Length: 303
Image (cartoon, rainbow, N blue to C red; front, top):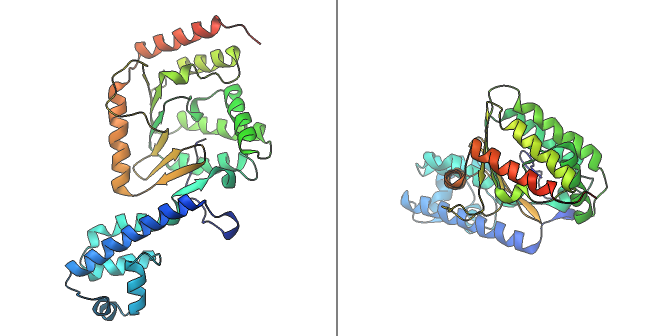
């Protein structure tokens, strides 16, 4: 399920599991260590000296450097100006924004059903100019047929034990398809060959989905690549991820969605996508793979 935008803050009643809290704390401590290094490199031998320079309490400097307190965005700006590290401000601010938002638990996001989550995706799609999508096992949501999407949402409803609004969620997901035809957006989509065979809904649903891929691959701003099962890989397949310009990457797991906004981490996903693309085939080769998959489902008995 492709999601969107800056996630809402955790609340006491929906706090993440201990492993997530541990990961956030490790990130907080790593940020504090970077701030401490900046302070020392700038010639402030002690937290007390830095507190005097900034007008802060010495205890605040200590808490920030030891990962006991999240700095605000203004704190980061002051720290970078005081230590003459302004060029690091954007990267550190991105870290601050997501230390406590490393993971969005699916059950929490979907507690009122799946439709609301799909609706929240639309503004992100509207703002994005370049999409880079990798999915090793499923067809990307924006290319799905109504029948295929409905089947995926039935799985979501059953797995997460959430209110059944699969029909409404499907309708909202299909709204994303408008962006395939509007503006100058570029869609770079790479799928694993397994996505052509992962059976959602039976042979007829799958053949309809595969026909849909044959149709959309002709769109001028959509680049559809498929990595054949036997293709040499330059990087392990990993989880599916969606890149929205160079600002946001969403990585999906069974339990949660990982939101990446730090520039240096986004660069890693950019590199990963480029390596995956090197293993993909395009054009006629994609068409042949899809036709082979259609033939496979033709041989299967319909329910």
